[in-house]
Amino acid sequence: MSVTAPDPRRRRRLGAVAAASLLALTVSGCSGLGRTAVGPVTYHTDRDAVVQVNSPSVRGCHRLAPSGAREIENGTLVDIILYPTRDCTGKGTAYVATRFSDVAAESGPPWRSYTFVH
Image 1 (cartoon, rainbow, N blue to C red):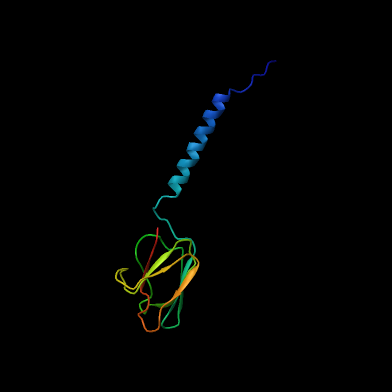
Image 2 (cartoon, rainbow, N blue to C red):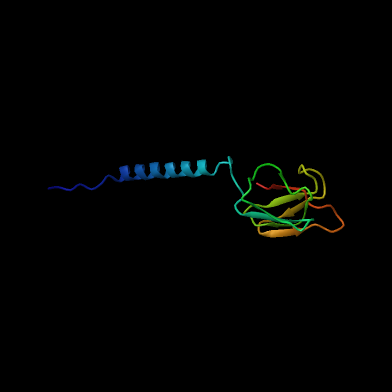
C-alpha cells in the first residue's frame, strides 16, 4: 500500500476558492440594502415622554415626535446629525457621535429630525 502526499498547488487553489467565497458572502451581507444603525436612539420630548427607536435604518431622514426632542442619546454604532426642522434641512444642526448625547438649549427650538452619518 502506497500513500501519496497531497499536491500543495491543489491545496492552495482550494484555499483561494474558499477565501474568495467567504469574501463574497461578507460583502453581500454588508450591502447598504436594509442596513441599520445597531443600538437605540433615545429621546425625551417636551411633554416628558421618553421614546426609544431600536436599530433604525441608516438611510433617510428620521422624524422625531411632533413636539420635538430636548434631549437625545445616540446609543447606536453610527454618528447622527440633529436638525431643528422636520425634513433634515436647515441651519442650527448638532453632531452627536456614537454613545454620546445632546441637550437642546431651552431658548432654542427642539430637535425635530435626524440623519445618520455613513
